[in-house]
Image 1 (cartoon, one colour):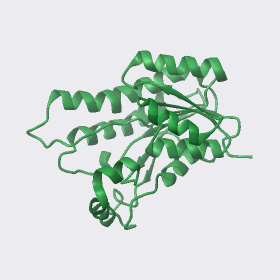
Image 2 (cartoon, rainbow, N blue to C red):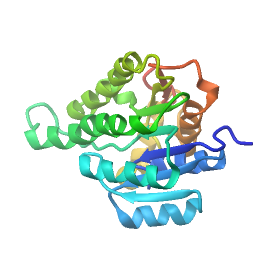
Image 3 (cartoon, rainbow, N blue to C red):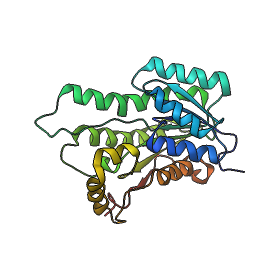
Length: 244
């Protein structure tokens, strides 16, 4: 029996990258998973790979109506929800002096507002033993040029977990943060190229980028009863980048 046997999960940003790797691991551990994302082609490809215990819902976490539609689908098919992995994220680089209001809005609408409403709208379907996982980042702890909006949004995610651990006292629902470092998703590989990947790998004490499956395994730990005495915590899966 898997560690998530019989559990129902929602993963935003679940069609690609860390979200898809987490969906694959959750299903392997016995969960039924709803993946949520904006690109129908990516969602279709993910469901084809993940199999009969996956469903896809198209939408954006920055659109409350889309989130309402997601949770209506969960309630209609499964009735309740055990795990929310608020993983959808956005970010681009602009140095101080070039930052625009549109840049801030795009980043915070997804990474902060989207995370807040992903979780808030899930709560009526959750109960004792529920697990909420927020995707943070090593960027929320470290400083890097051009990362003002993204880093601030991920620092916000870290505080959301601390605040919500207080708000959720007595409900039996836990909330924790998974903070990846550089991860070799398909998008990262395309964006960085071979040389860029080598540069990022050289920054890590482990001297490599993470495999998305390693992030998925950490998410499964936070989703399962193996982490039952953890709430308000952060698990850094960053190759040591933000730890030294």
